[in-house]
Image (cartoon, rainbow, N blue to C red; front, top):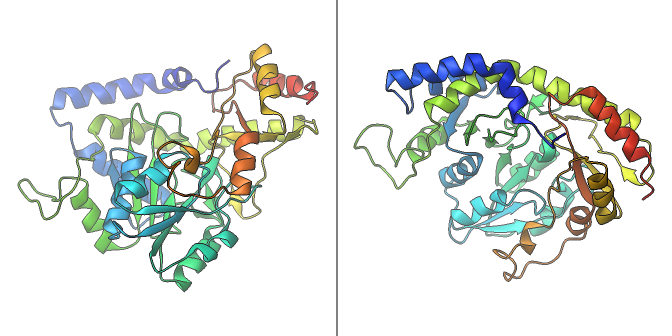
Amino acid sequence: MKIFDLKKQYKDFGNIIDKKILKILSSGNYILGDNVKKFEQLSGKYLNSKYTVSCNSGTDALVLSLRSLGIGSGDDVITSPFTYFATAEAISLVGAKPIFADINPHTFNINPKKIVSLISKKTKAVLSVNLFGQAAELDEINKICKSYSLNHVEDCAQSFGASFKKKQTGTYGDMGCFSFFPTKNLGCFGDGGLISIKNKKYYDLILKLRTHGGTKRNQHDLIGYNSRLDEIQAAILNVKINYVHSFISKRKRIADIYNKNIKNDNIILPFTHKNADHSYNQYTVRVSNRKKIEKYLNKNNIPFGIYYSKPIYNYNAYKNRGYKSLPMAEKISKQCLSLPIYPELPIQHVKSICNILNNYDG
């Protein structure tokens, strides 16, 4: 058993994907071709997003979005400390400063009630994160941003296919940033990213930013990046996006089995916000003694993941920058543990995990 098994999914689609890849290799057209255009159209339709731009990675999606909004040196961006490092890193990469707001201990997402007190004259945006496949309280964050004339960027690296009040994540903020890293609900065979955009002005600007500052050869209107989704990754995503609903449904089925069959007071199961449709990129529980349950799981050959072992401000890159500890982020980072959940995980394995966890004595 594994925490995720990419080989199993490849077996289901390998023949189709292999043919697509060979066709691209023989065509000689590897960058920004028909497959990329098709994926931007398909993803835009799926998300119900007016504009979409693909790029090299989820991290680049964040950087390009912040740059397009004019965020840079001297600016502050409020975000969550309990997420993958790239969220804060992208803010720093454009020259701005991440300002960390504490999280909701139930959803693990940024707590809207903690945002307002952090807003200053330097604040230019809120970068929310839809962690583990569950949307943040996006409507509340939008209200705050509107009241204070701030931009709202969504980090949707883990939430493709998730929704809030029946509206797709990535379409609440000014921009939504997606990752297609292989382990995501919709993953390619390497790195890949996408930005959903509301405003055509920013769409046109991001098109330039992703290709050295221009959309035509020898056009460089600004200092940009080399951040293009290649044709092979786009072709893979074009195949898999047709099955993403099935992938998420299978994840939900596994989560439902966990929810109904894990009956142990020592394990706090995931909470789902009443307005959120969770897509379960991870199934993350809370325990009071993580080292003890890690030993127990290892003894029983059950894989697990720790997302994330400490708040971002405790990593060396940010440690000496004067950040204060946030109680909920500190607490959850010491308690969280993610169980195996991927579409191809056999149901008998899921039930076996439940039985083993029910015998854990805490």
